[in-house]
Length: 175
Image (cartoon, rainbow, N blue to C red; front, side, top):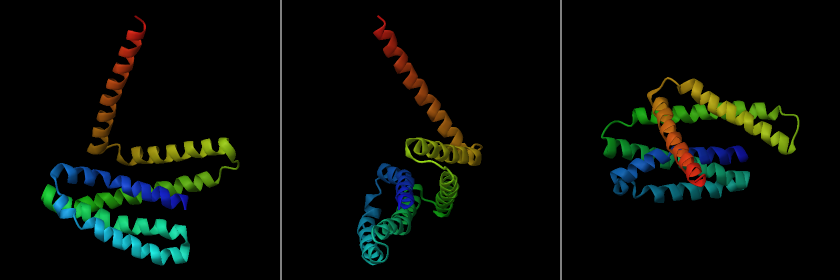
């Protein structure tokens, strides 16, 4: 159940870029029925799947409605009406990232299952494993892409501003 909740959180996070562009382009008219369709699919799937899997069925229903309705509708409308181009590349990249994240998650869960102790130390070790696998995997796979270079540049500029402000605060405190 925990893995499914994390997956649902991840998929909702993956939608953030499309939602941001939808807001920027003002494409709400084209997505006006998405919430209704998503709700109907979510409710129908939840009623059926809760009978089979209990609360897990409700989470799976969220995954189904997010994957088959929201992500598809938002991506299609954004590409058609915002970018005015085919959505094929968008969906290819979207589902490539999802598949790669699932692969990394499977590796991380597998390695975490090998941790022989529990409690706080086990939790910390599993957290380090998950962090190293996820960050390391994405860096290894995408370090030569333009998007990665832009992300690193953005992080550097953010860090420079943050540390500049922290340095400014410490100088003011020393006066």
